[in-house]
Length: 163
Image 1 (cartoon, helix red, strand yellow):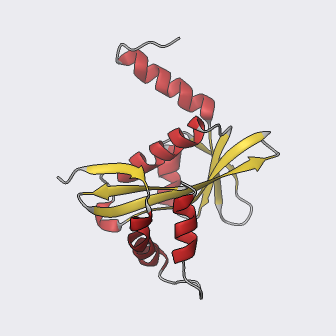
Image 2: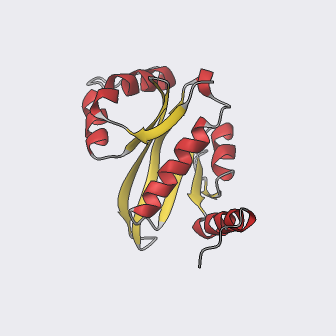
């Protein structure tokens, strides 16, 4: 099996990110996506999963001030793994890395929305809870307390205790 790494996207990933977006969405805005991808890469908003020398998935999240939550919040705007690489834990690795990065830089919450049931199950497996759903979308919010509790139980089971 090819080794998969999750890392921050770099500008040379732009063409492959463009290709993954086209594979996923099957359409392109009139002015394309290249400049938007470059801005997101420069802003350090995209993480990629790389299998061998090929980028096979990505997650894009943005930080914003959330007056409802009373602090910075991360919102996952795009998350995709190429179909032939699904079911191998790559999506989970990307999601875990994005959550860790968001919390490290001060997010008080992590949110997303989806219309895909399989994506909803993935998020729920990582401690996201359905918060709203007025227009057929499923809005999911990370339960940070539940995540921290689950992580602390994992550390105790492994014999690692932090106070």
